[in-house]
Length: 68
Image (cartoon, rainbow, N blue to C red; front, side):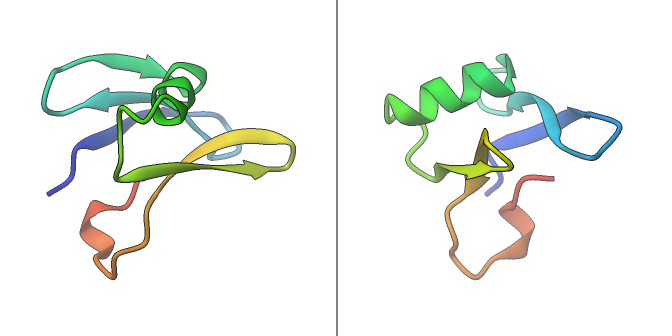
C-alpha cells in the first residue's frame, strides 16, 4: 500500500513536497529525507541524485507504491 504521495514537483520534475497518507503530514523533500535517515520510513531510502539527497521507494517489484 502506498504510504507517501508526491503532491508537488519542480519544473524539472524533481519531487518537492510529500504527504504521508497515514498521518496527513505534509513534508518538504528535506524534511522527508531527514525522517527517512532517522529510520521513520523503513519502506524508503535516500539516493544522491545530481548532488541532491532524494527520497526513493525501496524496490519491491510493485510499481503501484513508487513515489511519483
